[in-house]
Image (tube, rainbow, N blue to C red):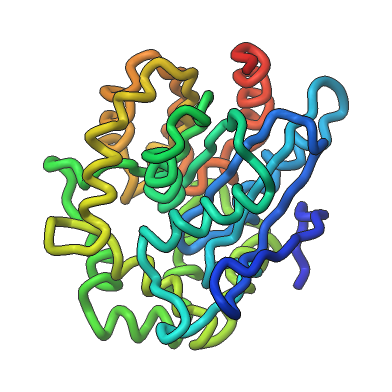
Length: 300
């Protein structure tokens, strides 16, 4: 695959019998750890500019960046349902296994996007003492705000067999996100890099399963975990937090930003009217140095 801006060497870890996760581990091994968690339908490629800016800076402090591809996503294995349970709890458990494998028992900066927020704060429920700083971009860590309506595009994939079919048959979700998730048009080779892991019916299983696992009420398997994360989000109000938000995101919009601002009232907020869901695509020239500065101003 041609992956512009991704000069990294992925590693692999078997997180389930016969199922391996791909992950990046870039930067000095004794550097402050930044764990970056992506969502659906992206992969670690979303974080590439931040990884380069933190792990290999031209000058200044370098950070250790650990960036997994969730199972079924990116360069990780894409097993069928008989070999992997595509649920939020399994995602959280995979992150725990990876960090345990790497011996990450000390402080971390948690950086999240999209489903990465639910996975990351799910992990943080049992590792809160390790989370010392937060970098939060267009995501959720609490149930859908009451004022927010489920976008029909997401409901179609979550609740409709037809929606699931077109996602798996035509890569509709990943392809659509590469166009609709940005305000600044992606270069063609970058767009191809985003969608390239999802090049067959088999390899698109997780883009559908993520959507089908969206918890909207107590009847959904992921609800209890997400509900607890939301109730405890304010526990992190004493940690330095950096919120970067693309306000043109039609899913994780101003309602979700308001939820984080309410729970983390001391957070540093950078919201952009001319940026979309993939805020690091639209604003990486601004955000990467801003995030570096944020980390330097709030040392561990």
